[in-house]
Length: 142
Image 1: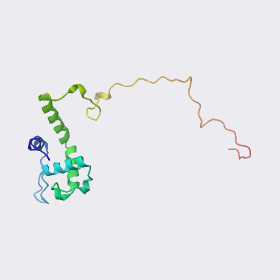
Image 2 (image 1 turned 120 degrees about the vertical axis):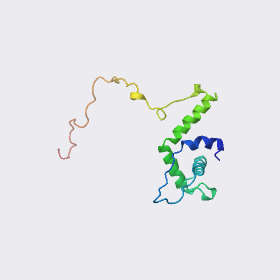
Image 3 (image 1 turned 90 degrees about the vertical axis):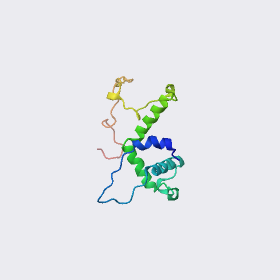
């Protein structure tokens, strides 16, 4: 599912996991198999916990944790940059149709501040909490 050339771009971006010599535990699932599990779930819409172990991707929760950990480590953002750079060098990007929003690039200093909105009414509205009210006939007065 993950071609060798793509895996060759992804593997150097992955953080190296340190083994704990005193408490080694189980050997971790290989990163490529886990990535294939992640892509399988994202492509098919399977729930993580329903990922079939028979496919060799490991458990769905392991794949989900790796997805989360790789996101927190910035792996996906770096991979995105690597792929964009390669496509740009190959002349395969059409930047005329590019869209940018705040989810990818943060506005420095918050961008321009909006001006104060002008009022369209002649004065402030009357308060409804302090207006004098008359008690209904036959009800006790406040």
